[in-house]
Image 1: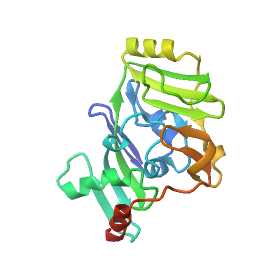
Image 2 (image 1 turned 120 degrees about the vertical axis):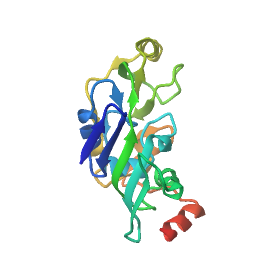
Image 3 (image 1 turned 180 degrees about the horizontal axis):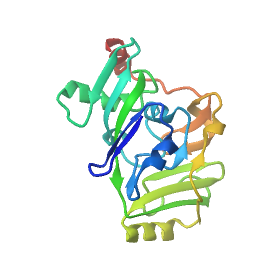
Image 4 (image 1 turned 135 degrees about the horizontal axis):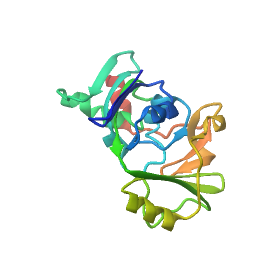
Length: 214
């Protein structure tokens, strides 16, 4: 299930929706809170891992979730009209909980406008460029960046970042046949290095108590 509201700048999609399927459904000038890459687990996997490569707070881009808790309860958290503050408060801890709070059945994500975009890569290790892009990550020997916004800003970013244009979206699912987790690997962003079959970070005690409560 995938529904896009261009006028109100949001999308609603099932947790099993592939990331590039979301990209393909968007009209020109609207962008989701993840770069044009495919990763294991679709939206469900992305949100459990706390996103990928973003240089902003991912939790604020998730407007609502419907998920199945570890006890099997179906929970609606947040949404386009929020009446239950406690429900909304579950959205942000869920993002990046690595499955401790359950599985995403449906997600409502904010879309951001941009009149221009650039998808670039350059040789070298991950480092902060003079102009911060929306997404920044390293794969093997290259640093990748995806940025969108005003045409002049994108032009300045491309000039300072350098490198070459990436042609088309990328598919990293082949790097993770046993699942995507945290550990030494060939793909990394500013939060973690991502490994095939890697582990999840140790969760704080508050997360464990929350998981037991829902």
